[in-house]
Length: 162
Image (cartoon, rainbow, N blue to C red; front, side, top):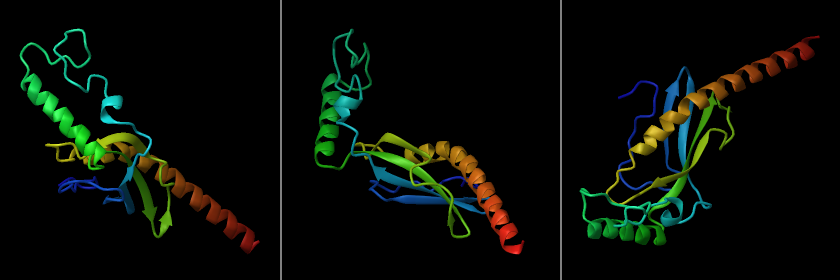
């Protein structure tokens, strides 16, 4: 288990609103899955999504592919069927920060959009990797927010005690 980093792995399919948390230096960070309604279909977002036997095509499967053309085509068809059924999604992984009941970051201030989730034969564990890659940005932004809140409180206190 990683200390101070997101480490909970999804146990299956992820859904809109799923969260994982970690605490670093007294700040609680929450990574949340948000559906990305603006992402298109997998075949539109991934040049070379469909396998091809043509060497010049983006989806060329190579001379000695691990899976046959038919297997790769079946995998792509399964992805498209899952996407049409709303099971395979594109999402955002957004990291927020909170300390002492104060929300330090806006909901989407530190987020990555267009991340695919729930692919067939996938375990979604890379979503934790994405959250951990966003975490340093969220930590920096949270540190700035804390300093601003402290400065604002000091200014208010100075006015009230003058």
